[in-house]
Image (cartoon, rainbow, N blue to C red; front, side, top):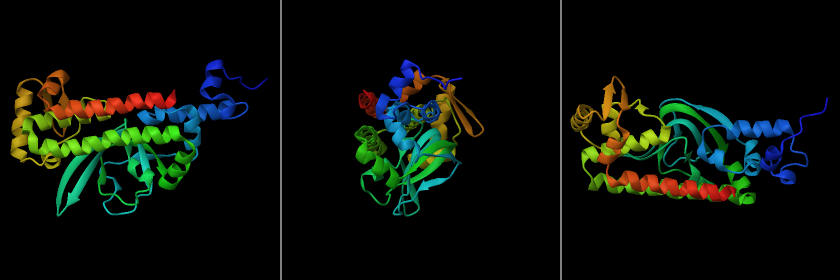
Length: 269
């Protein structure tokens, strides 16, 4: 019996002779297994670029409260998040300010691909999940030969940087309920789910608000049928209503990520 002969679609996806002279089916299957994971960036880059990354990508489990990066410490890996949620924070003098949340659409540590050595943020797993990680040195090496990967990561980094800056502005410009609704929408988008395992204490800490104030806002949203609170879990029942209560920052940040997704599509053309 002869070996499997790739279909026309498989051959095209394998980029013909640029990947290999025959495009072995086993290699093609391995690539699809990585590409089928939920990280939006790995799913969008070309199979040729994915093949260049494949040998250096390592699947990892993201346990709750696991610290991926610490401020002022050398960074060893970049994480392509597949599931779960990572909180990006500024920590100083015992205080903490969350600047972004990163889920399956994003990457933790993309800025270090351009030569940075240490982090100014702390990156902590908020919701458990999974990721593929790659050593910084390996990613830099691949990016030199693969401009498509470099461009996709740069487009995403621009959107992430915008979210970090916008979060700081939001904290001084918008009221409690607007900021709370915006955070819930962004977190929901990041994990592609409407059930979020968050507590009042956590929301008050990341938003820099009094716990009593957060509780009051949550009670009001629940009375209006927008959300439901259960022990340690919050469920969004009326997503459109929640978006209407969010400040303008939510739409601005969402638009920034949508623009980066459009750029991803151009990277693979």
